[in-house]
Length: 253
Image (cartoon, rainbow, N blue to C red):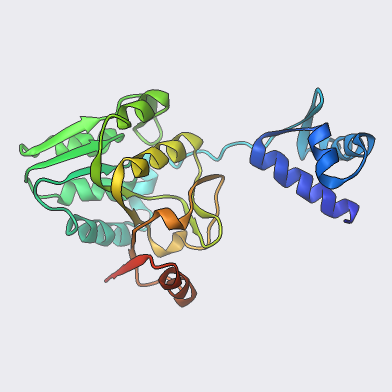
């Protein structure tokens, strides 16, 4: 392996695991610990990572969440159409969970007033559903993220563990054919994982611009998704691969 290639692999590992030890890298690459220390020293000088006692830590910062008001106008028409299609999958008596995506908020606006139980970590979704008398709304509580007006963290995750739902409706920042679903925020990614864990079925709601994108934190593999709702601008290559993976795909007009 070339030195430059080893440096790239080291950087990928540090950013993926957030921290690694010299001994671990030495064993992995089959070189001496002194060689690894020199590698880390060089990468630190290039401002690629930060050396620590016995290893190195990542300096890659978590991508900031896009403010809710800004997300509302991004691909708004596509998100509304996807939300309308998602609402058609909900029946009286269902128990569902909605994430804090803009598409979930559009769903909340379009949901008819019928007997439902809805769990959400979104303040905006909860407020929208509070206008409908027959819908029982359960908020996860937890740590508030002001940019997205949503609750995350251990309390939110534990509260979800108490429930079982028929369907989870989630969105994400990126859909990659190999890496699966990803998000820019670790807290949101962990909560989406828990939403999927408590659901019989997971419906992914994403506009076509999200395909081929891989962001900071992996949420889950594509194999955990039962159905995808997206717009007709999705590339044919993605459609073929999703068919091969037996993932139901609905293209909205």
